[in-house]
Length: 309
Image (cartoon, rainbow, N blue to C red; front, side, top):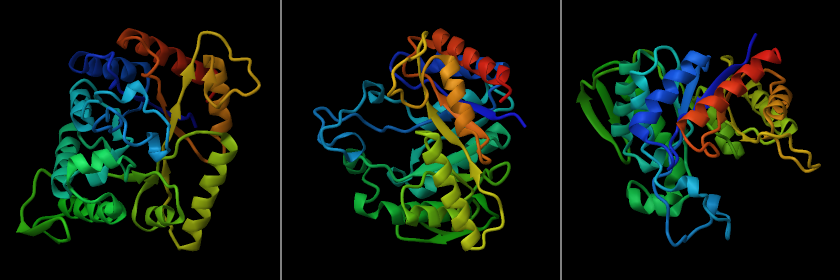
């Protein structure tokens, strides 16, 4: 069975969101990509008060300046496409009011005919939490749990009722409903996060940083699912941050997915072992414009299929 391939939509500063998002989505679906993805970066602190990922001294990349709203970006892709799934990788869920986000995702799924995938995470930026004003950073795990509960309630049958710390819905009709149950996926970086996934959620959203590491994490998740009696399969969608170049990278310290298209395909083949069969490429950062992004996306897709993947 061929790997399912997706592509990140253009959200970096060099793109015209209103023109380029529908154009790239339409073209990429025609090429054969089966899913499109957006990420969330609410702000860019200047001067920086916190390092990237909370690591002291690590600079935020310029790509994070002025990132468009993820759900607006997906909305621009809805009418330009017919089949591809539309996913978030990821939404920083605790930055949002749970009820409003649940309704927005339901509306987007209804409008797209049941194509939305909700990738949630807790984030790491203290500045974003302060600006959003929804909940303290220290409560991010509890807020994510409430977000999941509210989404399931709002997306379920009417009348909707929910009573939680941040959302209280008295018996009410809440529409539109999703066209089908929206899958919720999360990354995992702790045993607690893995347990939440196994017990409550649909799937896993790791980053491909090395075949051995990815496979080890996947097996840990499968073992935990067996241990806790989960019977339904865990969906997995792997993000590939590709640093492509026209020439092959000949350094002995080459990172995964760094180098020529052929090297990226070789790395993909290594990461696709052990039941991991869905990947999406982050290619937008190094492209100069939408045309280059479309050209590289086509070259990568064709090379993957030519390799029999």
